[in-house]
Length: 219
Image (cartoon, rainbow, N blue to C red; front, side, top):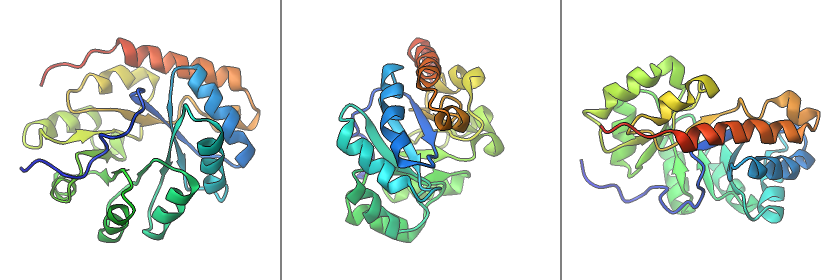
């Protein structure tokens, strides 16, 4: 396969753990971002599953410069311009359509599309993506699927999301074709709704410690 020309290599976050977040109130966004930063996580994916998503992204982009904020659950092409205008620096989707692909190209938006099968991974690579989100990771076969794809599709890097938790985080991050993982276990809705930011920081620090101590196995 040819070297891709469209990827997310320009993103500046250090964390290999990407919190997947659904917010119900925009005022939760900034304190949550600070809580994650205090725990060593400098990236957050705010999903477009709630009407407050765009205002939440805008609040973080404006007020927390140390946080790289992205938009998740991008399922329609028109959303790309909206999240760009809100200040998102990257986007993720559960899948990939021609319309979304054209939109992210038009707006020069770093983008991680979702893929579940070898054919979907191959299509993403042909369109220039170097990283895809294996989603839903658990249902797609998890670590076994990542190992199976590593041979024939060794150039592609993955962000497994769906079924990732603290208990299997290290096993995922050890895989040589995994660049990062997505998960929501460190940002549960009950902690966000009750503004338990110290507990969010503790969970983020716990995940960060695992990620930092995990060494990838050679392929």
